[in-house]
Length: 261
Image 1 (cartoon, one colour):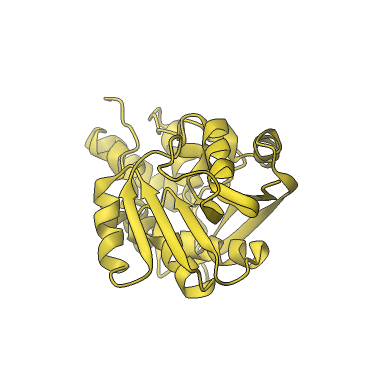
Image 2: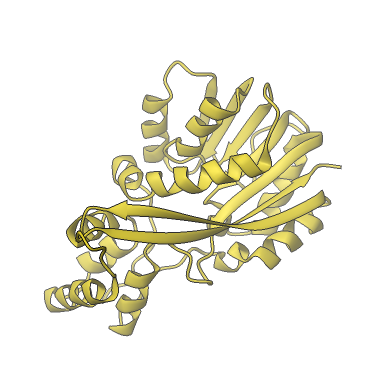
């Protein structure tokens, strides 16, 4: 089977697959960060604008600056956020296009493990935040089995399929997050797990949504038909159903926050 990489080029598909999960975890995250209103925010890796919209809806920001490497994701975000106090641009988390100390808070929602050099990405967030400002992030605990479709990934690997992982998956560990934030000179560093649940109507609903993501959908597209059928049946046997045939799944993210000295 050919090598598959994680590519974000379909905003609508990502929204259906991960948007709801992101909002579930993001609501808990923002409650924990508890930012004051009126802040200038940088949403690093804003993608389809899920976290950007949450900041606008919940935190009464003065402005949100969003950056993402995917033009397709940004196009989706621009449509959903039209008319709101947001500036979106294409760029890298490791080279933020903002001057030193020009925002009051910077965050990454489900992004840190996609940054090729997480230490540089955290240092960049710390650089652009003004003294006393917030630097925070949350990311799925992939190595701890917290990813929303971890069970499908495990069954795929048991069948010999290669499931792509983010380039910096180690950065999703709470210990790694704490070390990254401390190394960037941030103070009052705290971490916590965030566990959320999502309900699906039945297995077919869960399976269809899972295939909208950039990993399993691409893996199955490159796999022989027999292997794809086998994976679906293994997943069906693995995922428990409720009494009415529905499925309730839990996912766990790790979160971190710190203050710019």
